[in-house]
Image (tube, rainbow, N blue to C red; front, side, top):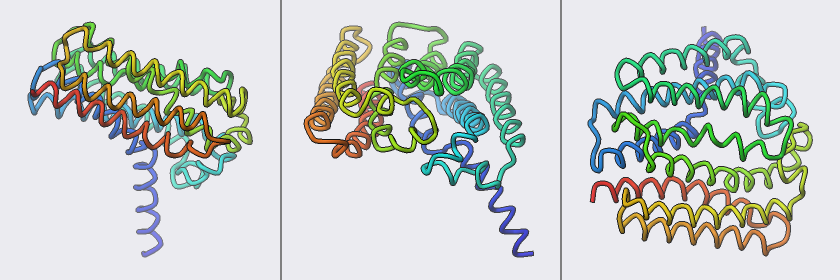
Length: 293
C-alpha cells in the first residue's frame, strides 16, 4: 500500500514537473502586465482568471510537449536527468497526450470566455515553441533561442488583446521587449551549462561561438533592450513611472552584462542570469504600477 501511494505521488508530481511551473509563473505575469496596460488600470477579475488560467494551461502543455520531444537530450544533460520522462515517472506517450489535451482545453476556454484572437495567439505560441524552436531550431543553429524566443514573447500580447479585443502598437512593444530579453537571459544560463549542451550536441551559442563571443552578444542585447524599453515611452501608452523604472532596470542589466564581459571566463554568468530573471518580473511590475497610477 505504501509503495502504491508513493508511486501515485511520484506520477502526480511528475505531471506537475512536466508543465515547468516556475516558467509558467513568469509567463502569466507578463500576460497580467499586458492586461493592466490594456485596461489602463485593474482588469476585470473574472476575465483575468480566464486569461491567466488558459495561458497557464497552454504554457504547461507546451512545456510537456517539449519534455516529450527533448527526452533524448534530457538523458544526456546533467541538468535535466531528473525530469519525469527520464526518470520514468511519466511515460512519453502520456506526456504527449497530456500536452495536447492541455492546449485543447486552453484554446476552448480562451475562445469561449475571452475572444478568438487571444485563443489563436496562445495556440500559435505553443505551435511555434514546439515545431519551430524545439523540433527545428534547437538542434540546428546557435540562433535557436533568438528566433525561438518569439513563443515566450506572446503572453503579454495575449493579455493586451484579451482586454482590448485587437492588436496595437503597445502590444507589439510588449512582444519586442520579451523577444529581445530572451537571448541575453538564456545565453547567461547557457554559459553556465556550456559543457552540458556540448555533451548533448545542442549548438547553443557558447558551444559554437565560444564564451567571449557569447558575453559580447549578451552585452549588445542588453543595450538593445534598454533602448527598446525607453522607446516604449514615446507611444504614450506608458507614463513617467514606467520610464524611470524601466531605465533604472535597463541600466542595471547593462551593468551586469558589462561586468560579465570584463571578468574572466563565466565568473559573473550566474549573477547575470539571476538579474535577468528579476529584471523581467520587475519590469512588468513597473508596467502594472504605472497603469494603475
